[in-house]
Length: 118
Image (cartoon, rainbow, N blue to C red; front, top):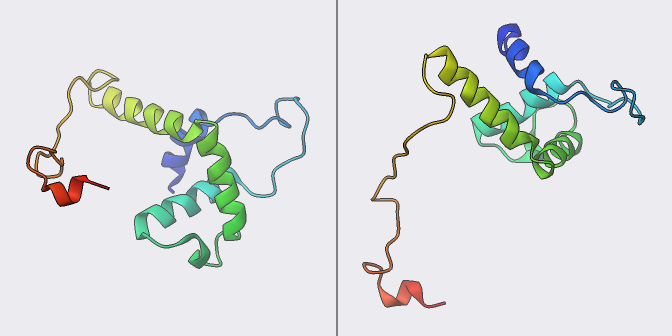
């Protein structure tokens, strides 16, 4: 992640509880390294257990990701970044339309009975 990208993402992340004076202990790894690890995983389509050794250990990265996912922070981060990109392009922050690929949608009318019965 470049410094410019990190500058945008950093502002969207929640302040850790220990930094905000809410107690708790400091996290063991930098958020930037954790996000870099998750981005690497998604970009390369690898499994958690084969995360390269230059990232934090995979159980720590997974725990970080799962905690943020379960708290809804991944969706918030995605929505915030999408809004920032759309604003930078001079568009409304929220999309007004969606495209659905009809070849990917399974229709029960055209699906053989053998596929629809479980």
